[in-house]
View 1 (cartoon, rainbow, N blue to C red):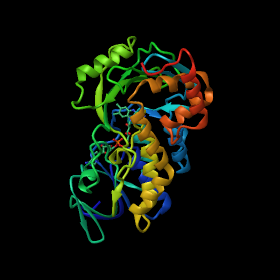
View 2 (cartoon, helix red, strand yellow; view 1 turned 90 degrees about the vertical axis):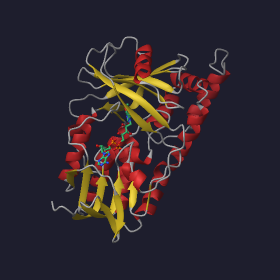
View 3 (cartoon, rainbow, N blue to C red; view 1 turned 60 degrees about the vertical axis):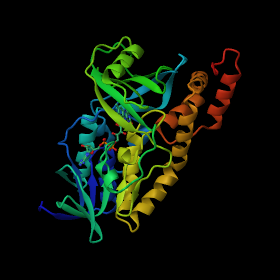
View 4 (tube, rainbow, N blue to C red; view 1 turned 180 degrees about the vertical axis):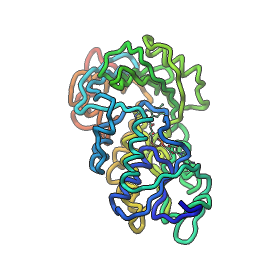
Length: 382
Ligand SMILES: Cc1cc2nc3c(=O)[nH]c(=O)nc-3n(C[C@H](O)[C@H](O)[C@H](O)COP(=O)(O)OP(=O)(O)OC[C@H]3O[C@@H](n4cnc5c(N)ncnc54)[C@H](O)[C@@H]3O)c2cc1C
């Protein structure tokens, strides 16, 4: 590859958002010159719960990704045990199983799929974008007609393109570790919430190979919680969790109307603050937004087209989760929703769609919540 090269599209960051964007662009035009730039060498770890919603796999399958190869070495997770802040438990079967694929594997496999489709990968840490000649210069090493910033939570591209900063109170932090001493049933995901430091929860996501991903996260308020605090909370919520090596990372939660780019620079995934503010799930949004950005990138007016398609697919859901995330600052509402999910499969399914997919509160969940509220033993405001 020459020192300075010309591309139809440069994708900064080759995580799920970046690889999917490259795949989508190559699918839209197999002759396109698509470059992925990543500061890391693959395989690389990404601190994450590794939970992959079936909705994300649907998009990848439509792009021709072999899902059996993508999830090889893991087993589908069929059940979810949800414990609300004040201890209501809903344990039910997912309508569609989830997957838990360690990111070292998932991201490597996605990068390989994008390369097989014709995208090129170069190791480089991007620092500066400069608008030039109907395109964008990247650190003097490459010129591209369009750039997709998929460089994660600390996105340089986001800062360089002048995107709006996320509002205060929309960033969370979480610690994650792997354990092979699994005291929990295999095939069941666990989420344990707590009123302490609310909103906050711990998770157990079994991978299906005898190991599990465990972690704890909470919203960042005035001060960033310390590692000692987060570790103490993890073991308080999962008392049977063996000692585990933990690493932390920030989560830019979706503010409802995220700023996803300007002119020739589009933002996808965490770089666009696209993480579900209710659950911390970001892989589905990363893959969906990467798909839409990659599809729009080679058209005229890419930013407008991308913004429109993202609004059409996710806009209502994002505004909804933003509003709900404000309402549930009162944790008793989550007790009510969990009671509804405990008592009604359809309410449970609706709740999962909101947390993992693009769902909104539908009549089944609303009715079940009203019923739960009306009970004498209801979980209501204290
Ligand atoms: C502890 C924790 C647990 C989570 N659990 C889950 C979960 O279970 N399920 C779920 O759906 N989501 C989860 N998330 C969120 C999920 O990890 C992210 O939403 C997801 O990784 C976003 O993908 P991405 O492609 O946008 O960014 P990333 O996966 O962060 O990829 C960004 C890429 O950009 C590269 N990069 C960064 N800066 C530069 C630069 N300047 N130049 C070149 N390359 C650069 C990085 O090396 C990286 O490869 C969790 C997050 C955390 C922190």
